[in-house]
Image (cartoon, rainbow, N blue to C red):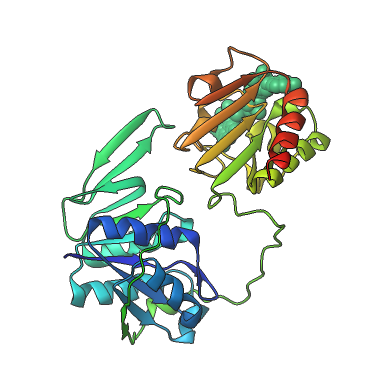
Length: 316
Ligand SMILES: Cc1cc2nc3c(=O)[nH]c(=O)nc-3n(C[C@H](O)[C@H](O)[C@H](O)COP(=O)(O)OP(=O)(O)OC[C@H]3O[C@@H](n4cnc5c(N)ncnc54)[C@H](O)[C@@H]3O)c2cc1C
């Protein structure tokens, strides 16, 4: 079976959920091999095996932690040079997309970014122009390099016993020019990261003020969800810009997206319409958001959201 490389995104060795998704996807396309770059491999080992990696390339030199993206592209290019994989899958994060671009130049290969699925023959599915079109495309030159959005595939365990290959890399001078001088951990609450969350509850202008975002947070917490917001809400200063969903915010593709008091402008849809199930709560039955929902609730959010939260809490 054809080898498919998956670049592991990790925090101190612990793989991010998107990596488990990519391993699951790679299993449907060929034989997944994980590529682990940096220190902390011991923290990753069990999960990479659990999600079906047949092989793990470990470039575990701690020096690699000191740099941003360039060394990852060099490591992948080196492995691809000797392993001749059928394709390379990378998470569609800002870092992943930069690695993919650099790698494509090194391998003289085509690259597809922001795929929401990949089918046999490495045909990538993309949702473009604010989600107005679904496109299928494939790389016509070299090794297909495809970045895949988080939440595009549901991660499924399929235990394997991967072989390990230690990779020693000699970095080029160019790859070591930008060095990390300090890193500060983002302060996190108990909620999942927005782009990785399986459920997202977002609030919009309909909330009428920052103080009412508490309703969204309570609903989100009852579901174990991340909190998002429309640009109208973030521009008004009701919620941080880092939580904005949409064309100029973050792209999310959760299993469930709940839009509360959001009209469904094209720029908002661009960031959420590949969500698997969409629910909207809006008092205006003509709101454009209702064109794309699976379930729509026409009603005042101040009546609906507390009742919904209460009902969910009761069922726990
Ligand atoms: C270049 C550009 C980029 C943009 N990027 C983004 C982006 O990334 N993300 C984004 O979100 N927007 C973006 N926008 C803005 C976008 O066009 C919309 O203005 C914005 O999404 C509207 O936010 P909203 O739906 O919260 O507000 P509104 O459009 O004002 O909608 C509020 C909704 O709340 C409903 N409502 C009001 N009160 C209640 C109530 N009590 N109960 C229930 N429902 C109620 C109303 O019926 C209405 O449908 C961008 C715009 C431009 C020009």
